[in-house]
Length: 131
Image (cartoon, rainbow, N blue to C red; front, side, top):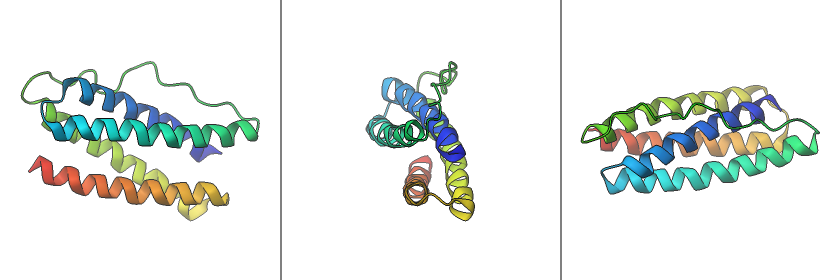
């Protein structure tokens, strides 16, 4: 339950960051990654929200502060955005690893494994684009 609440907030932040990337990205890689992340993270949020509702737990609301809004516009944006995204995704991997060690809800453990492997793959791809 705690993982779902925390990861929903984390995913909402990822979506905010991705929306900034989709809007300001100067390369097709940043724009396409942004669109992909928005779709994937929203699907996870929908699933975790349904679990929380079935447990009669409140679903977190998106953070008011837009993550990534303070990133510079212009030619340096993509590099700064990828750096911010990488740090954010690394935190998500740590969250997924922690619940994998202590969690008991089967679907949560399955989702945590998917998040961990997916975000590790994204981090490896981001590293290639950061040069």
